[in-house]
Length: 272
Image 1 (cartoon, rainbow, N blue to C red):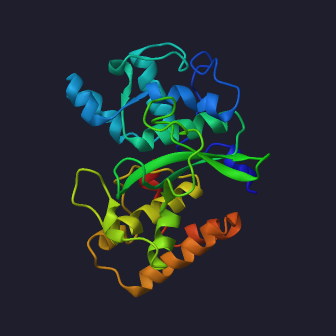
Image 2 (image 1 turned 30 degrees about the horizontal axis):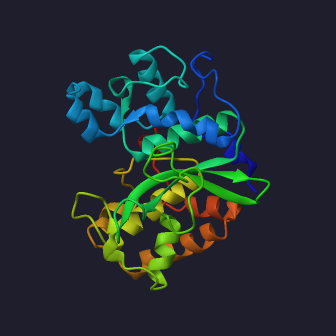
Image 3 (image 1 turned 60 degrees about the horizontal axis):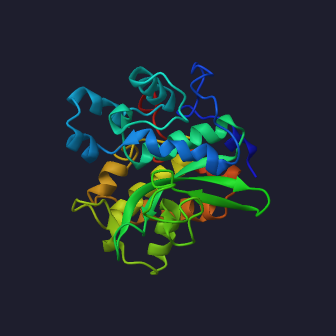
């Protein structure tokens, strides 16, 4: 097990955040994740509330520290206190997952965000989504939690997703290449972006997550832009096959070595 997952990465570092803002967060992983649901507001919901256009800038923010600074600017109270929707940052499922990951790591929990596809939002579809997972020493497994819907009515076990309810980018690619899933059912809700290209993209983003670099859902680097356009060939897919195999094996050394590949590593200017 790579114990480094218990320490922050470049986007989950909370240095400089006032201790009072983070006070009250504790207990087990589920308790740490629970407040996150009232920290983020999806863009569509923000539009319905009529929030000013400048509020949507947080949707483009990568570092969790900056997101929490924005939350404090809206309401200087501990994060554990429930917030009215208009006092939340605008963001996507990625924001929920990465904030939860940062809070878990602050408490020394082995945790990581995962980019992939959820099967529980629309019947017959696997939709682009992010969750967080923490290592359970007692069960000797990664426990996946969806902080966006945790404590809500949508799924009564969002604290511990069942196998198959969420496929990481790694798992989705392996299943696609093995002929176990229909790639045309994998994509972004409300768009025409469905198919193998979406799985390729989420695999590369998932690899970055496993290296503690949790990018925005629409960030692209390496050959990702060409892959989304269908302009990559068998050689690139074979590289992704290698990535999937090493990540499924959860070998931290191999995962780090693969991430060093020029087509897979996030450029420094995107992280900053």
